[in-house]
Image (cartoon, rainbow, N blue to C red; front, side, top):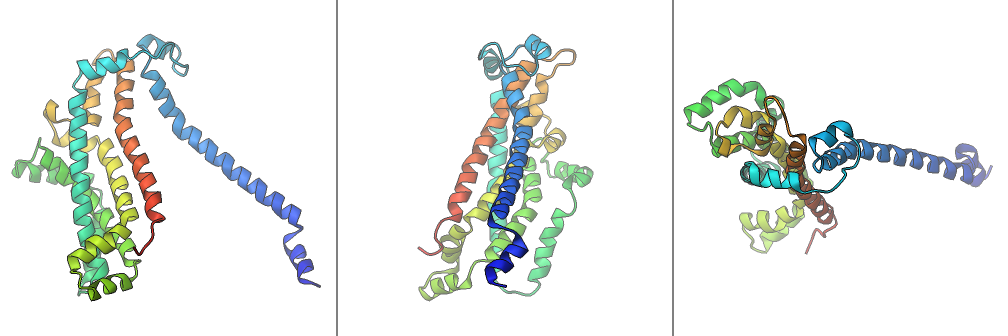
Length: 291
């Protein structure tokens, strides 16, 4: 039996193999299209509802709006405290991500690139923060922040988010930095570069995809978080968007068109940032390792 006969007996004729691969690819594409529809359709309904009145939403919730009137957007922007809530969310999210990326990267770099005693124990200490949800410790956390006079402050909220994000940041960055070849930093040392310059100008540019992953993974839950602002923030001027949008819901009646408009505007910034960072992530992967 020749090699071609053996391959045909084992795998079937080429046309059958090609047809099988085509059917499999088609099934995968169908599942992906269905998943995209399930994920995007609620967002589409929310966006369309932001141009409707209450009467339109109740009579035809899934239909297209009769007109693309900006009346709801004007109400949200001019008659509510939405701009203040938006600024609070941007400030808290940017500050939290900056501290998480800086502290997490420095700790991960020390663990991944330097050999010292108990390095494994230090890594496990940080990773233990991923095993217990911080929400379970909300009572002692509230008491501690109250003792430090950090209740109803941006600093207290940022510290909570930093404590939540550092373990995952160290986990991601440590694994990525360990995969980089040591020859790069050894060559830089031979050229007289300091350890600080090696980290900033040699290693961190190569770790850009991991930095983007850390930023995305932490920015989305921080932006959407409702629990901690509800517990730690009491002043209306310091509320973030998820907490601030609840004021759009009245005790007896709710203007659902205005509420959907607020939700759409709240989702827009983080969606744009996510798209931009995703493109940057793809570009970072294709960059050369050595300049």
